[in-house]
Image (cartoon, rainbow, N blue to C red; front, side, top):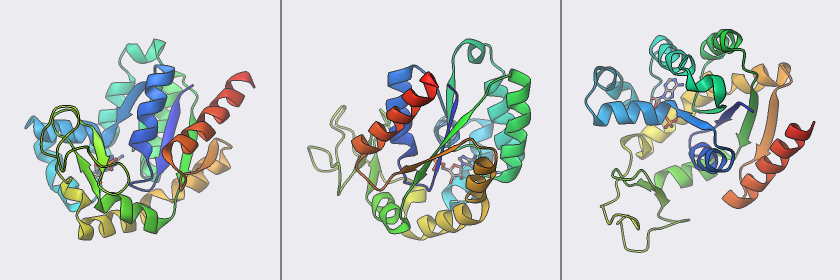
Length: 218
Ligand code: AMP
């Protein structure tokens, strides 16, 4: 069971992926997390991608495609399935991924987290993260126990630079133009399962698990 998780920024792709990864032992491949780690560590890739990320625009396809293909060609992927979170995000990336999947002989299913735009604006603007352990909070819906401090390691929480209000708007516009066409792309291939992501996290997860169970049996 190899999965792509697709949806607006703030639809819950990272949160749901974390649950799925823990439950099914999949490899979690989040392009956003990889870019952020590289920026934090000051690598060449990080230096190349920081300005795009800060502005909320997409990193060029060539950089992103090469990064993902290199990861999917590593030997652990032969024996362990994976979930792609935040990739593909353009039709070119989807075409490129199709070729890579043919090479590694892995079939894929796509979970589409469908959500209202206003809900993600509310979620993203109140999202805070701990840079130390990576835990994600929401000041409105899942706040930390102590104001602005991580429950796990007491580090001060920060707002992602691309979660500022003007950047959120840019990200949503780009998503609609570049990424939304992927819904039709995968629908036409008969690979898409739409999940109502307006509900609470545990209800969304329950729907996903039910679907994965049915698919495993079928
Ligand atoms: P995310 O954490 O998935 O919301 O990604 C954060 C940012 O990383 C995006 O706004 C882009 O700048 C960059 N990024 C992540 N994945 C991709 C991708 N597949 N293609 C291009 N840029 C990406």
